[in-house]
Length: 262
Length: 333
Ligand SMILES: [Fe+2]
Ligand SMILES: [Fe+2]
Image (cartoon, rainbow over all chains, first blue to last red):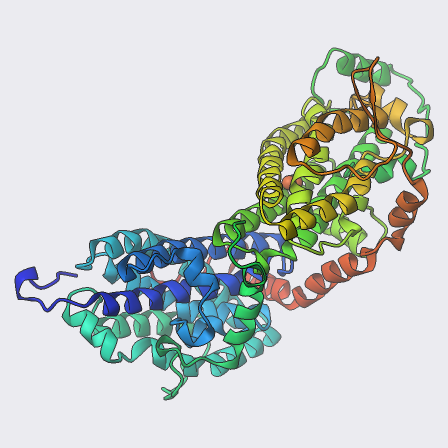
């Protein structure tokens, strides 16, 4: 994506940049934590390893992005301070990422919808005016392309597999579709970031996401659900009940021993 | 060790196949010359069966071993530790895969072996039937359990069966990495707060004896050692390996400032190493028989994953049937 000429562009404040970076960071962190729950419990050894790889990539992205957010913020918080010492209302991940795993099909559908969004977002962010963010995004886009291949591949196999697998994934699509509204509808911060040349224009991401997901659903012989408006906005800190439990598990150990290193 | 049940299974291998055309003799001569036996080569049935049991037990141990450590992935206290732990648990899954593949070269399928594990007929290492109660247990497992695994597995890199020996070379590299990471985790706790040091000591207290038991029964009670040694499937006795482990590990505990939970531990001046007190073998046999602290939980977790994944595996098979085996969905991008 070609960004506007720097001189004519409005400049985002540090607070805005930090907030936007946290949206990306927390989405990767929370999704990675969810996928890591599968290790040792997957439907086959190969799936344990693949889900573990994706979790590693996502947490790796989160570490880079959290560190960047901490530097932008300038208050000395590092990746762990941000991951372990913020409460749910301070998390900025999209609500889709925090949804519980459910069965393997449910996890695959969640990942598909999210992978497509992360892939298109990071691919566009590779041209961001924020060069540090752009560097992280280049690497993340490559990883997310692999994640998408994995999740979309399984979506198709499950959708076009047996009657039972078809039923299970179509229920998961129905369940999770409402969380896609948040991915695709820009709020004031998304719009501001696009104006400043930091984030891609939401309309472009939306179009590519819709094409990508529609094609996968078609191949999986699953109907594309109608648009559902959903008022939940994790990216503004208004989360579902699931996030509190996820964070209780993630954060309890360092919080029980403040001030030590591990 | 990961294959400790072999030595106490009590199923003495049938001996003395008739050696009409001298095949056995030629086979043994190849082993004596340190030649590798490969899948297509002729081998005595006892050799094949012993290897299958040993490799399968080893593979099952890797897979069940993912559970106690996996228990702390979601609770790791820093993102770096979380990433290291996920990668470690993944490595263990990878070890299971190479080992199942090595066993398959002997003519037994992974599906069959996994069924044996889930039905409770196949054994895996007793060590994984102990619980991981605190974060320090993750350090103790890396340091002690991976450490004990290395002691046993380094000699297996020279095992007479080629595919097993080659799998072990790769596995040993990763296990020694795990051992170092585990020790480094313990060191961070030992140099941390009083609560962290107490956590580390408590973990050592609980993992020390089970780690010594990993090497299997004492030589006096070990059934298969002699034949396995002749076949170069085994190169050192259980007690030799256990002593090696004690000699290396006690000074490491001292460096951490932790106390080995053995009141009879003493320095043997003549041998120039530490000697441990007597092992509680009734605990070992109870755990091996299925009465350890977590035997039921570990098997239940494996069965649950297998059952819950059935519809997924069936769907993949049905898709492959419709679209040709090995079909990869043609998605965009
Ligand atoms: Fe291993
Ligand atoms: Fe290991």
